[in-house]
Amino acid sequence: MNISLRKKIIFLVLSLLVVVTLAASILSTFEIQRYYRERIFNQMVTQLDEVEYLLDTLNLDFRTLTDYDYLARYAQRSGHRLTLIDSLGAVIFDSKVAPDSLSLLENHLTRAEIQMALAKGIGQNERKSATLHQSMFYVAKLHEFEKTHAIKYIRLALPMEEVQVVLRAVRWKIMLGSGIALILMAVVSFLIASRLTYQIHQLSAVAEKIKTGNYDERFDVTGRDEISELADLLNAMLDRIKNDMVQMKKLERMRSQFLGNVSHELRTPIFTLQGYLETLMQNPNAEPKRKFIKSAYRQAARLNNLLTDLIDISRIESGEMQMTFIAFDVHHWLQKMVADVRDIAVEQSIELRLVNDVRENVQVLGDRDRLNQVMSNLLINAVKYNKINGRVEVGYIVRAGKVEIYVSDTGRGIAPEHLSRIFERFYRVDKERSREVGGTGLGLAIVKHIIEAHHSRVFVESEIGVGSRFSFQLPRV
Ligand SMILES: Nc1ncnc2c1ncn2[C@@H]1O[C@H](COP(=O)(O)OP(=O)(O)O)[C@@H](O)[C@H]1O
Ligand SMILES: [Mg+2]
Image 1 (spheres, protein in one colour):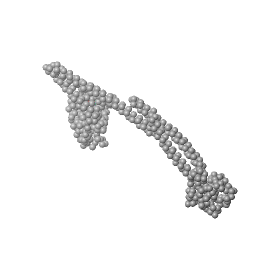
Image 2: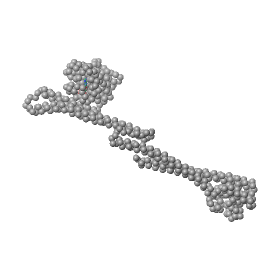
Image 3: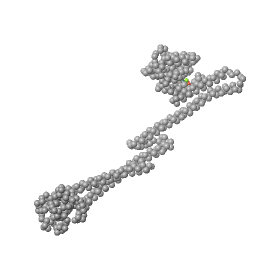
Image 4: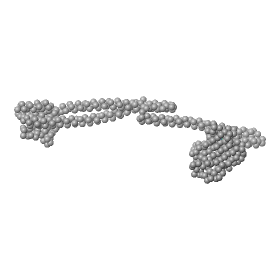
């Protein structure tokens, strides 16, 4: 199993999570601290207003111990240190200092919060107290009713320690929350990473099997994510490869069959020729018999036909044969084709004619040389596989945008079981007859190839004992 990928994913996700949670908690801590400070400050300002009100209404006298004590207790209860300062900076009252020690305190006019209060009405500062030796948060207010007492500044102070306790608690809560979120997200990322790597592992397990030649294996991944998409794609690819392989094997088989057929076809004429030449060699003085010479010539001609057809077939199948399409007159062309085969037809006592007797001006598009080959193959077949005194009719029918060309004969016909196979190379219904008439079994294969190169098809209808009709279409121009 590919552990390292899972580790990488988890590591990546976790480090991202840590960075994000850290940033989030630091930011929220700062924000919450700021908020708390502000709240404490506001509370202290309210408290200052209250003290101010108290001073104005109660008209306290700090030289009396009772009043001094009264105010000190009040400050104690509110949890603050209260300081009252006159316009020159002398401390008149301090809840944390006894009245007889007040004169020992230094002048408070230089304190930052007092300066700020003088300038703005309210001042604040955070620092270590020179009097109490601990960190304090000070808020001072300029006293508006100067007529009562000599009080110019009222100041409240809160030990920072108390603020810190609250803030520490807040920080802890944030840290705890982030920690829990982090753990939860880590578990989720672990699960996702495991599932992801499990699927990839599954894919590679199947791929391993396919590598060993098991092409029937298929990737099986459920879900609708990219990995299952990939699995589908790979499956489709495998289907293609499998089909292609079947096709390739079939082609391979066909090729070796073809080679076998070719060798077999070549053997008979060569064997016959060899035998004849041997006889001649052994009897150099004997007069060669005409019958022998004729038979040898026939075999040589057959060899020639065979090789010509083989060369054609291989050139067509390798794509070497280039087609050049031109427009030509169908009527004129068929007339010429019929004339070329006339001698052979007469020889076999076959009546051969072009059905369309009135010449129409019909032009078709095609490679004329190749179509000559098609036509002479079809015509010679129609003549040779005919009956004595049979008929062969050639014609054309103009259809929408197309011209159908046909060759029909009153011959022996072809049985349905052979009909689909006569276009195969070397396929012959009657081997003896084919050989007798000089056939190679390649004629219709060549016809089919050429017509297909014209983007058309060869149709054949046949009835045994009645005759056959071969037809194909060419585009009309
Ligand atoms: N017009 C036809 N009538 C009857 N049989 C035919 C006709 N044309 C072709 N065939 C049959 O199809 C076989 C294949 O034809 P073809 O490929 O031209 O080879 P061949 O060289 O034997 O003529 C022939 O051997 C013959 O048996
Ligand atoms: Mg033929």
